[in-house]
Length: 235
Image 1 (tube, rainbow, N blue to C red):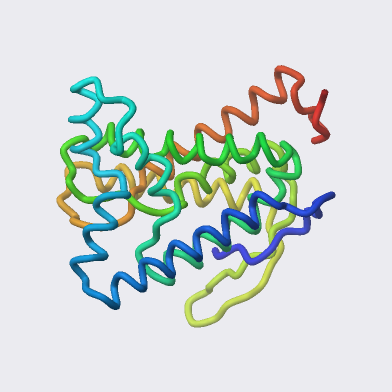
Image 2 (cartoon, helix red, strand yellow):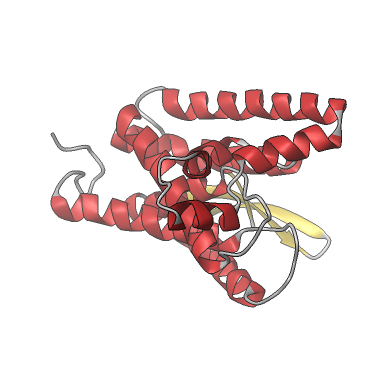
C-alpha cells in the first residue's frame, strides 16, 4: 500500500513542513554537487554529518555530549541517499506531517519533528552500537509524525495505491489501517534484520523508535489535556 493523499484538511499553511521539505531539497542538491565532484567527497560529507553509531557511542562514552557526533542526530535528518529515498520520505511528510503541524502549531511541531528524529537515531544506535555505516534520512522524524497521526486521526481517510498482482487500485483506507500496516511491516522487517550483516540498508529500528515516540507524545498530549480528543489545541 502506498498512500497518496489524505482527506484531512488543514486550517493553516504548514510553514514548518514546507520549510523542512525545502531544506531537504537544498541539502540534496548540495549532495549531488559533491557527487559530481567525486564520490569520495560525498562519502566524506555523509560520514561527517550522518549518524555513525560507533562514533556516537564512543563520543558519549567519553562524556562528549556536546560534540559533532551528537549534532549528527539533527543534521542526518536532512541527508538522503538518492531521489527515491528523498521523494518517498517527503511524500509521507507532506501527507501526514502537515496535519500534525496544524494540530500542534509550527514551533511545537518543529521541536516534535526534530525530537522524533533524535529518538529514532538513538534507537537505531542502541540496536547496533558497533555499526560504522552512517544513518541518514528524514524517515525517523517522519515516523514520529506517523505515530502522532495514528493517535490523533485514526479514522482519517487515506487515498492509497494498492497493488494486486499485476493490477492496482486506488481506494480510501482509514489511517489506523494504513499506518498500522506500515508499522507492522517495520516491526517484522526489524526483527528479521537482527543479527544480520546487511551493509547499507533500511534502519528499521529508527522507524520503530520514531513511530512509538510520536504516538506516545500524542497520547500524552491528549491525556494531559494539552490537545483535546477532537483535535483542537488547548491553551
